[in-house]
Length: 364
Image (cartoon, rainbow, N blue to C red):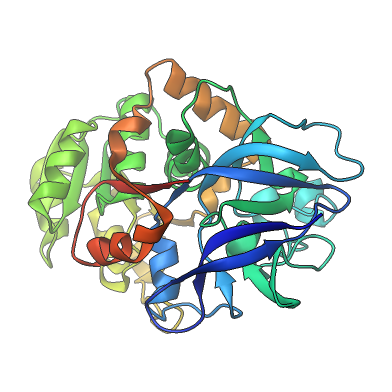
């Protein structure tokens, strides 16, 4: 029987409407999840602020964790009562990329269109479809997701921590471990000390990088960066490359951009030492193309790498991240600076726009 659920719905403009939706029963290969927590992420804000286009109406939220309350036909690896982290990009498991093990660049997923594998949506209002953002829609009391988008984790990992594993932590950790393959003792620069940037910094510290330079325009963000492992901090500006060179003598081995801003992405290659690697993690607006000096890359053997979800394989990486948290090696809980209810979602995004640091989590 379909489930009624309160949800944060985006139709147009920057404000969300808190209203009731109907959550469909899980179909074959799908699970119904009662949400415990949902992260308030910058990607959601991009949608609300008009930077990216989505089908309408959409239940927002893509960073979620909760409890399986029902399973559809054919689900064998999840049971009612399991605690799960939700992935915002379910792989189809059939395309060439999936068969090669590169699920993060799957070409057969309907997640970006807000569709489940069978082409349906998780939600409805008066029989009209309501789309879950990235086929998750975690700013809802309940949601239905593809079974491959729900990964079991230990019950003792708090839902607010688990929700962040599903996006910002996996993205930052994967950028360091999977995309850059950072080696101990190598130098690194992180531009942007927001949620993903802090995840990158703590992952660099775990990898043994040194020095770790954080750059941001906010003194509060830089103080947080230092607390998560940054050895040096710089105020971002047009002279960033010169300041990095003054600190290191040669530039850094690795640079990560975690904002999605054209100007800072364009700065990265100049911040690298010859042979260094720049990793684009932040997603810029669709209509703001980036200009890169290709001659600089070629002559100095520098690499520019795109990081999509940190090349994450959820079934492999989410349990690892949960174990690193449990072992005290990734202090994810310290990222959380505010916990709010669903009715406070608009206020949480307003605070983000005003420069609030750390992570806010909606607790259901």
